[in-house]
Image 1 (cartoon, rainbow, N blue to C red):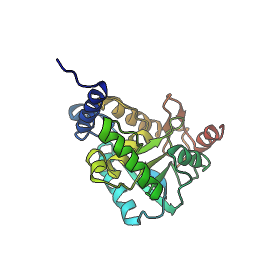
Image 2 (image 1 turned 135 degrees about the horizontal axis):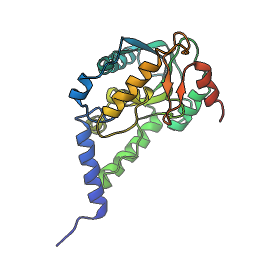
Image 3 (image 1 turned 180 degrees about the horizontal axis):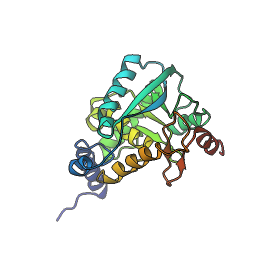
Image 4 (image 1 turned 90 degrees about the horizontal axis):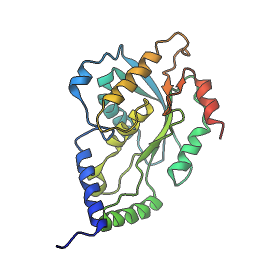
Length: 239
């Protein structure tokens, strides 16, 4: 009996996973019955200080936030892009972007910081290379976005795509929803119940008396609670 090469089996498995992910939020499958029984309190606004790479239009920024808000309406949350600033990408790799975001303090206008990454000629070469690998063995190496887990307050997404193949598996909008869940304290899970609880917890935290006024708090990947901006800024300045 002929067996498929292991690389082909791995590629097939990843392809199936990617196709399945089209039917969920990419952070987990929704559980509508459990969601309907949860109380998320009153509507709250999360203020996002937004930086975007040249080549991304304000119309595209607004469209992304509009789509994100449709998802967050499930939890009585609204995100607001605060004074979007055009900013050249601080480096080629995602780690370069995050390192730059670490250097920016949360001010009294911001609860989270987001960078919208565009596309340049270096990206075109890299995307062609990674798509070639995907076509050959089924592995996708390109990272579409990330959120740091020490405070869950800073992240970036790839807001420009090059090909129909990439858009088949993801899009700037779905990537923003994915990373947006991380900015609210969600991890990765197969089903969304744990994420619902994480969002519920951070909203309940926002109602405590010791919260800095006009600040939507955050909970790190390790469960550390941040009730004011100075706590967040101190942690990220340690490196």
